[in-house]
Image (cartoon, rainbow, N blue to C red):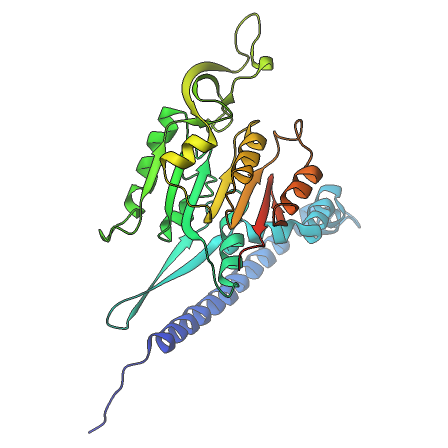
Length: 327
């Protein structure tokens, strides 16, 4: 009597991937055959109409400026950018059980320019990661769209999400609640905090912008005021705390995983406050688009370098810094 042995999870995954790949290749071949057959029929049917004299519409299309420009832009980085923003945002999470079996699920990097996967791959390449698994997201908005914290929370990290707009903060709480401590092991906490962080405490005027996703709100500045009222939004009053108050209240460790700052004009103050108070996050994601009036990127880079950081990359509008001093 023959004896059968079960395949290991790795072997099973390899066979599944091979079957899927074979299916996709066959499907692609059949699809291409159908396309070429259809194009042949179209060409045979309409050639007498479209080809007048020596004019060939296919050649004219190839020579069209917009077609050549499209192909050129694709070859010059457009195709790579398209891949990075689509298939390369998909990743696989592997979870091991007490019985030795493993479960694999898919995830999608929701950060604006792939910041999450960029940092997480860098973490995996390190020999060790001596930082608390905590992500602090200042300017968290809805906690999902273009979020620098959502995927870390999915991976089991704790989080402090700071968002002054009540509607956005409530959405953030709903978006992350399913991923927070799902097995009641009490090893993960996430708080959504309805404040702004600035250089003073109390109540401040906040400009709530009317952009499509409500992501451009900021502490009101002089240019936001006009004789006839705000240009494209309205003013609300929100509570403000300093970095010192914030870190003390929530017991933020000096060395934690990721700090993301998207504060639309006050990010420079926040960044300096964290560093000057001795906090050293493993990685800092810093949007400098609205900060350049106060400090140019080169100056920020030198300041960070002097405090044990190096610039890893620019992703979109974000500078990504990595702490070097802690081993």
